[in-house]
Length: 82
Image (cartoon, rainbow, N blue to C red):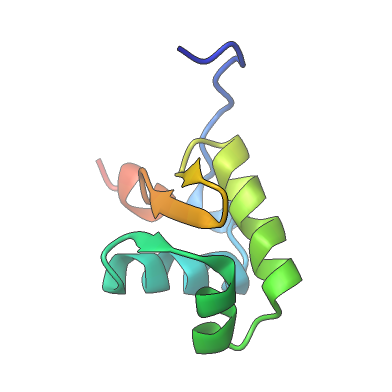
């Protein structure tokens, strides 16, 4: 059980190009990735990919089940379609 309060989810307009690239890549690759692989395939730097993943995690869109491994929880672009 998390002790952190849930933060509001991001809206599609709050996503930048890197966020969209990361989310697209995670969906294409089975939703589990590591930052180095994402960086290599999207053209963004590994540190920047890690930064964006942390931001997505703050808003509960991705989670980090193990060091260096990230998985998609909810795509904010789909949440707002409902």
